[in-house]
Length: 248
Image (tube, rainbow, N blue to C red; front, side, top):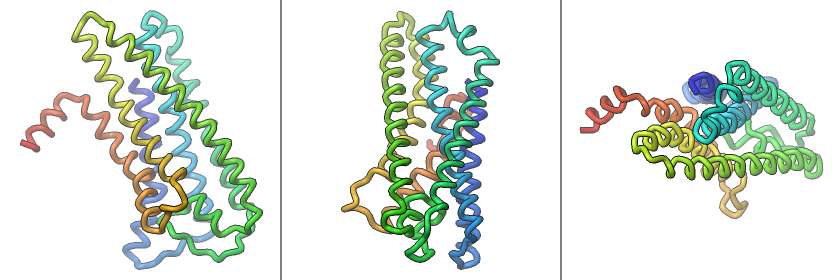
């Protein structure tokens, strides 16, 4: 679990470092400029870290499923070598996915200026600058990505249904508490990541506006990576006691 948490922390750090420093620089220096290569690099690294986080959350769901539903097989199914291979596969898949997205997006001719109504380079905003028919290829690619994401979401929901069925049948209250304390932080992170990202990309066009798009982009690109360490740290008893003392 802590090996995957380390990888998740790296993706969170990468997401924050990809978008926030440039936005802070532009705000402090009262500018809104970014170079073409800088925009491409920002899009690539943002997609890379977001995709890696998505893959790692799915792997962590499988880790929770095996540890609770098949505990006697845990050492065989999720040994140190298997965990390393799954993490490497997540990073490699994210690299290929972000490379294809970036190459496909920046191969489009931009016919409608060079101004983005966003605080970082985001695919939907770049597609708004492309020619009318040229972005259909990228739209198709994003539709395939959405279908894959929905399939993974169904897998996560099915896994947690099985997990909760097993946990609720546990005779020991201490065992149920331990299982829930292991699963609930991951479930909170998954819900925060999925719902903010889904609403940002699948919201109806009728409610779209520059201010709403900006708020939703902050919500899915900055808030989940910033809250993930806090959510997982709440399992630490000393930290919980300190937070409770501060609130009291």
